[in-house]
Length: 98
Image (cartoon, rainbow, N blue to C red; front, side, top):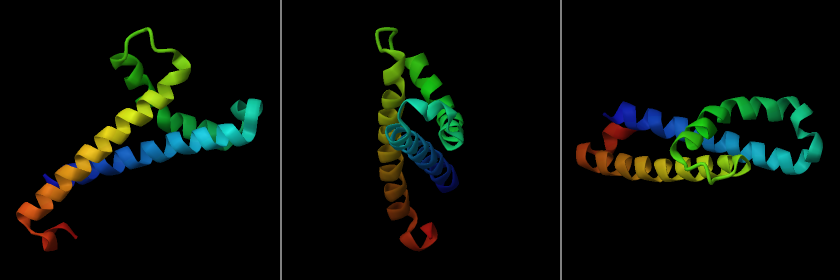
């Protein structure tokens, strides 16, 4: 159980960092961001979560807002999994969670 919780937490953290890095790099690179190799790599990492956000949101949500929606959904997942991990560690003992 703890392994699954930790795995979901790590996946959420990597995706959150990729989406955040993509946003920051997009601000720095400007309109030529699509030619930036590192931006493209971050876009590949974050794309599955943006696609998932498209599946669960109504069509009213614009495509340019989907990365923000995906980021917020991942943030809620990360908070929930972190609270679940804390609860699990308190139940089984903190020494077993290290």
